[in-house]
Amino acid sequence: MQQPSSDENADLLADTIHALQSGLTAVPLSQAMTTTEAWQQQFLQSGQPELQNIAREIGNLQSILSSGQLDGPAIGRSLGMLGAQVTEIMPHAPDDRKVGLSQLSTLLLRLGGELEADNNGR
Image 1 (cartoon, helix red, strand yellow):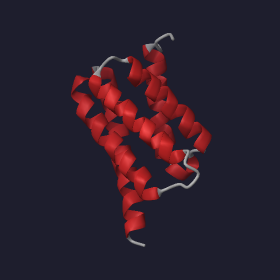
Image 2 (cartoon, helix red, strand yellow; image 1 turned 45 degrees about the vertical axis):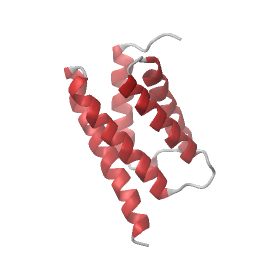
Image 3 (tube, rainbow, N blue to C red; image 1 turned 135 degrees about the vertical axis):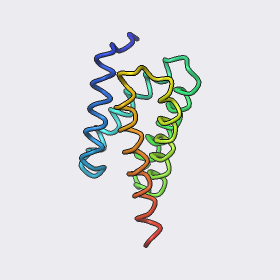
């Protein structure tokens, strides 16, 4: 499989941020699965352990999303874990990706926390 170009990576990052900014309920499940699959493949092929850890968490999120019964707290925990993992890799990212990764991490942590908090209050 051919590695995506830097421009394709930038587009995927921008598209993911835009989708998350629209709100989780605005993202069709099929689009979420396609996007997470694209990220997972990139990270698995990277050869970098920290990126492969993110790929494993993306696989966990995909399992939760495809289980048939959406579990808000489980989705929230997974998004929060992904946000924390993205934060950990930011210092090693190319300079032109750091702002986008920071936005992505912030969104994942916020949305994950909101999903966990919404259910805990019920």
